[in-house]
Image (cartoon, helix red, strand yellow):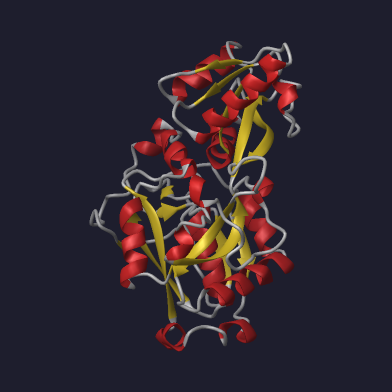
Length: 339
């Protein structure tokens, strides 16, 4: 398991409704081919947000091969005619990024959707292979997949073995009741007088406790509460025992969609970089170092950004607050002492 907090705490946030649909169905534990909800039609239309169980708004996006970008691909990949995409979502998935869809068998989520959009720009047939988190990297190392689209954080430690093309901010979020007037606004001082829940042992807990200490030095109070699972957290939020939950932004985005039609809908009250104040953490397409894939991947992502499909993909999955202005090849990642 990654030592970085984002995936670990995101998995903790899977709701019971999602967790019961195990991605292991029909797939070997070490990884296997998977049907995907995102399909590419003959006219280049890519459907995103299918079978999402209400987590996404199904959207059709027109994407055609850009020959100037596909020409950058390594000859071995281009001649194969396919882009083998690794997803590290076994056994239970992590909504809304990669999980079993509403048909109880098909892999869906923002990450497989985006991998297919990128493949369309490159003129390649996308083939999804699903792994456990640990075996995802084994799959890259062994050549079983060309690239991972699986909420992988860009870190300096990982750069020793992999190359990156960034495509999403690695953000934490504050979730509050929709009726709440409170917003974080990127300022820890706005937490004064509030009661916030957080997962124990996570990086977001570390940040919250640092802010608590700062506020105490200023004569202000921040109360931090813990609950054994996400159900307990949301019961506390709905009953007013806590003002906010601080956790991985994608998991919060998912819960917002699931609570929208309930008596206690929630909203996002602000985000914060998962890397802390000194660096914006980034999620990146991950390929083997010196594979020659990072640049064509980044160019394909930038094409999607410039032509609007990227923004529509994020909006479909309620992740617009994780948009990057540009994909970068091997941007600064989490430092070695925090990766």
